[in-house]
Length: 160
Length: 441
Image (cartoon, rainbow over all chains, first blue to last red):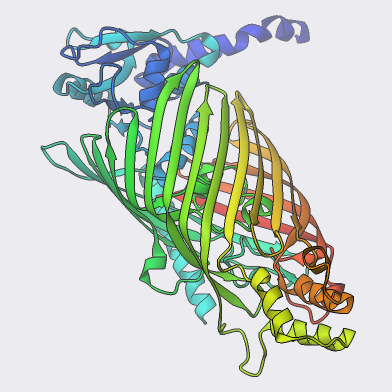
């Protein structure tokens, strides 16, 4: 039995993650796919690199590279895609990101991205607002969104 | 009674916060109103409920020298680390912004103005330049802009040996900053011009009003994914340093500097002329001197590891070249929601002797004045090792506990408030335990 445990140990995490993805609906499905960073189709920005996206979502810069004011949007607080997005983009966990934002908010240097109530609200805000930038599950990208970056989520960054 | 009332107020905040935390978890910014022209009004609040225990009867532990009492053996203090602050933020298309922060903490609050943590209007001139005017935070140290917000750092409070004698976190004036991408990171240059005034508690019975004008500072940050470097310089003109009658001082009591001087003159039986006293007093007086501060800091943050270190020299160009060197190194490791940390820190004050400054003076008078000044001039020399843990048990609530072991020089104990009639016999080692709950609402 101990032998079997040792043999399957490396696969246990992956198996658990897959099982959770299959068993639970909604957000857990999001945790298994890549993440697309999207903007309004009227936004002239064709593509962005990880650093440019990070600069906007960490409040370092307030505008897109071409100077257009940016309105970053966050997924709901407890969503797994949010944790995965920041982990993949910055290498930081949610508590670390919270401490980072507390520094900026309470020194008056920046305000965090606006948090949407649901993925559907994110989609609607991206469609309605030329300045919006958000991240969604790549499977949920619709023709009324323009993808500027795709983040590949390696299995070790799955948050299940 | 007053103490009880304060506790009840804080308990009320605690309960309100606990209810809101369980009801709604989100980033700590609430959009109050949004106008069609792209203007938004939002609000945020933070606070700390803290309790500090000390094992010294002689020395009261305080967070910084702006506090006039603290925790001692058998008398833990609830107010030392407890803070509550709320702020309103107005933003127009990320172009113009304004902020008002109101703060209640354990400092002297002489009038309504002292409750205002920050109040400024800002203009993002373009994506690189930003101008802010009003009561703006001063980027004097790595943690100085947000030292009140416990949720933003790992320790129970900013390292006492380093931040405890630093008076400055905001100035009334302007800030100009410039930011650009540079190589793999971001370069951030900041500069302030302004003035500030506040009340310092020099001892358990005496307070001073300090006024610093023509203050300017310049700092540079360079930040990459895992590293943050900071270097800064600050200078200001001390235009006022007045002893104020403290409520804690009896009317029959002489100011301690006069008492110390008379005692020393009697002890050494020296004849002193008013000219001697005036000459020395001018050197001793902080008013008219220039305060200078140079700092360097580094932060490394990769995966679970966080390391931060700072070094600073703060001093006056007069007052016998009084200056303090301070530094700390802190290492923390994030394990799930827990972040244990260890910090080593030290501060050492230095001052010229009267003999060095006035070599021609009567040696007996030199000794008498040195003895008097050694008792009078606030200095601090101590080293500490602290260990603790931060626990982010929810999105908005953080529990922290920290134990610090401090070794100090009896003659240089100005970070503490001495309670003993025999300062030469006070403790040289003190343990301080802190338990706190930081929150954002």
